[in-house]
Amino acid sequence: MSEAPVLLGKAPVCILLLCGVPAAGKTTLAGEMLASWPIFAPDVAIKHICFDRIAEAMATDEPGSTWKMGRMSALALLEGEIKKPLVNQRRLLLVDDNMYYRSMRREVFQLARNHRTEFIQMFLKVSANEA
Image 1 (cartoon, helix red, strand yellow):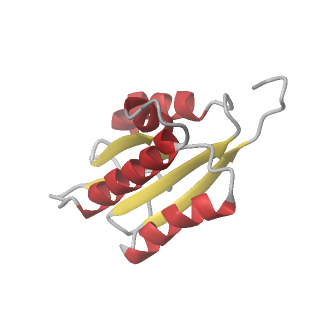
Image 2: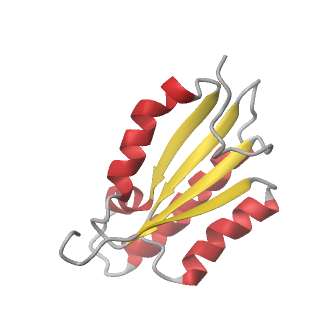
């Protein structure tokens, strides 16, 4: 069995927070990681949590409600994934959102700290023309 990449430390769960402006490539990067991860670390389960997709699925006609409900649902889903029992396997959770405000990133960091998981922030920087 191959060893997990250096991305994962000793904790059984690692949260990789993908941050960046809309159209920076966060979801594309997450998709590429999902597709290739089993080749590099078959003993590590990987899950993609896309805040935008969750908000879209909860769309209503009420202004502002979708965003708040979507964020709350995505955070609850993330916490549920952190709490899931592990059976001889580690887990990488890809969290995909622009995380524009520091307070948004802090919410995910707090979940990681409270559950003693690894936490990595990856900022995808692109110019406005590239996005």
